[in-house]
Length: 325
Image 1: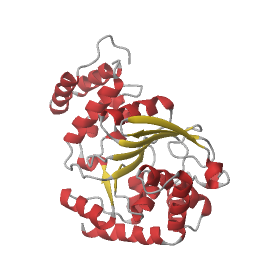
Image 2: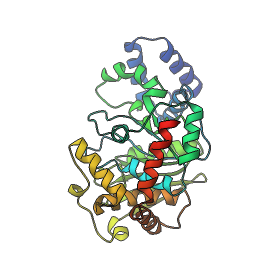
Image 3: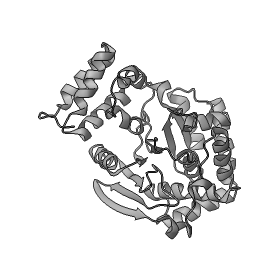
């Protein structure tokens, strides 16, 4: 992103509105190339996220949180962000989870919830009802915002990543106040933490040294915290919290059905490696939502909640509420 003149936010707003409403795929591709060469990527991503959220058919809910990753880490791990979101929502954190079906496989967060029978269709009132009654709702990105679909063909014309590759986790129409964002490298971490600063969000951005966009159970995870407009950093070494390292083979499956089965076993506590991996990620969410004093306590509390059967019971309530709301 190297252009001499940064794109002005007002000009960007006008340009993308025009592009979304009346343009060819070639014009959209030219627009993506232009913003990709800008010297102010954080400002552009912020403005794009605002515009896209503003076009959604759902809108903001106060006092909710999200756990979401960029995906694309090629680790084939279980659906840990969705499972962790279910854990923390069973413990009093209101979750508005944003996600989609898998882009390169049918193993995305929406694929997992669909396998459980989760009903995605809802309006604003039913979304709020789900949060109120079960502390959890899942927002299927393309169903409530057509902006990404409108750029799909244009993105295929460009052989490199553009700003749109990083917008998914930032365009939750519920506009959560607290974010736990998983990325795959330091560059994107810096982009997201700046976004959070610019938008008054709190929470954290994380990436693991093994490339995982989750808190890794076998490698150091680098976390950038954003709290009250200030940034701090921490390295999470899994053995210091888990008392061990968990091998990637114990928490990953290439077959979607086997992956979903392992995720369910982790939620139920019947597979220890999966349960610990989920609790490790849930513990960080509990920490940034001020539900626990430190990461070790967060992990222990999350694992106890899993082992007690509370999370499994909560999942059934989430599915039940979604079937009527």
